[in-house]
Image (cartoon, rainbow, N blue to C red; front, side, top):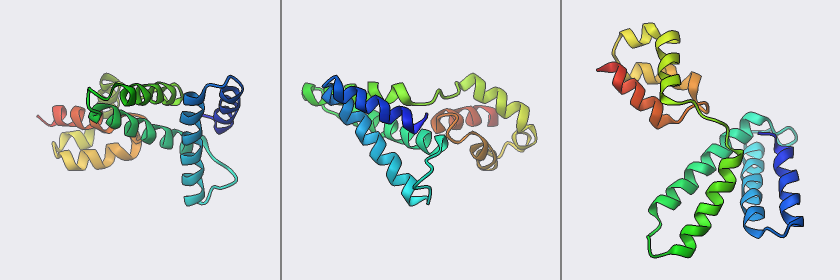
Length: 145
């Protein structure tokens, strides 16, 4: 995701007076800027940094949505709106089938050991940010059986 795209979309949301969308995009921009400064990339925010932060924020909002009590409908609606906006910008993650194909083709020697820890160590370096960690863990567990 291009950082500039986020900034342009925030300006568009401000002009449209869409407060919830503007707030969601603004929080994403702030989080991306913070990570960029922390990693020493203040002036050049890469797409990888933006994607990494967007996925983290998406996971956080999903957890908020899942743990929100059912009787708090207004809060749940706010979390859902934020989740919808952030998911628009989230990079497409690999499916379980795609992850399985990559693991069996590229990491056949690691899979042959049936050592889940070793497999996860090797695979996560390659697939971090491209697939959900839970999906990777599930696929590796199935392959180790």
